[in-house]
Length: 312
Image (cartoon, rainbow, N blue to C red; front, top):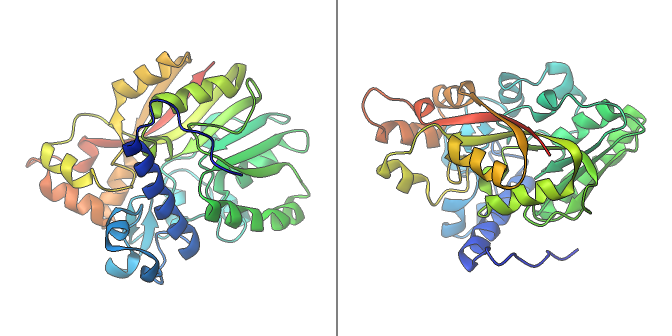
C-alpha cells in the first residue's frame, strides 16, 4: 500500500520529519526496542543515528528502554509503572512490548464488547493485542502504523494471538495518522500511545480523528505535552530528536487543536510520574535535559505525559 498524498499544510520539512521518524522506528522494530544492545549501527548514517527515536543502546548505559531512550528499566517494568498489569504484559505475544508507551490508553478507554477500536501508531501491536479480548468476537481492533517493519512485526504475532485468545478480531494497516486508511464515521473508539506528539501536522491528525469517529465516538489517548515552555537551551537540545519530547506542545495548545477539530468533553490529565520515573532511572535524554534546566527545577516541572479523553 502506498502512502496517501500529503495535505497542503504538510510542507517538505514536515515530510522530512516523517521520514526521519519512519527510519527511527524501523530501526526499533528490527532491534526489538530501545532496550536492545545489538542495534545494527551499520544501517544508520550518523545523522540518522543522532535523530532516531532511540539513541543506540550500544552507546548508552546498560538497561531497558523508554520511548525516548534507554533506561535502567526494562520494557516490562516501564509498562507496569504506567499502569499495565503483570498479567496483561505476560499475555502479550513475543516482542509486542518494546518500551514505547507513556500511558495506558486501553485502561482509560473503558472498552466494551462489540466496539470497533482504532489504534494510531500501533507499532508492534502492544495495545491492539490487549484491546482485542476486551471488545470480544463481535468487536474489532485496527492498528495503523506508517512503518512497514512495525507492521510486519505485529502481523507475525497474529497467529499466536488467535491461538491464545481464540479470537480473529484484530488487523494492522499501513498508513499515516494524518491520512487514516478508514472511511468516515467508522470507529467507536480511537486510542493512541505516545505517537501523536511525533506528528509534524497535529491539527491534521485531530481532523482525521474526528472524521473517522462515529457520532458520539470517543478518544482515549496517552501522549506527551509541556506544562510550560522549555528553556531555549533545552528546546534546541531536543529539536533534532525524534523522541517523546521533540514534538510536545503546551497543554493549552493541545486542547485548542482538539477543540478546533470539533471534539468536545475534552479532558487532559497530566501524569507526571512517567517523566519522573525516566528521570530517576537514568534515561540519557532526561539527564541531559535536567542538566540544562534552571536550578531548582526538574524535567517533570516542564514535561508530562497526559491521559486524554474526548468525544465527537
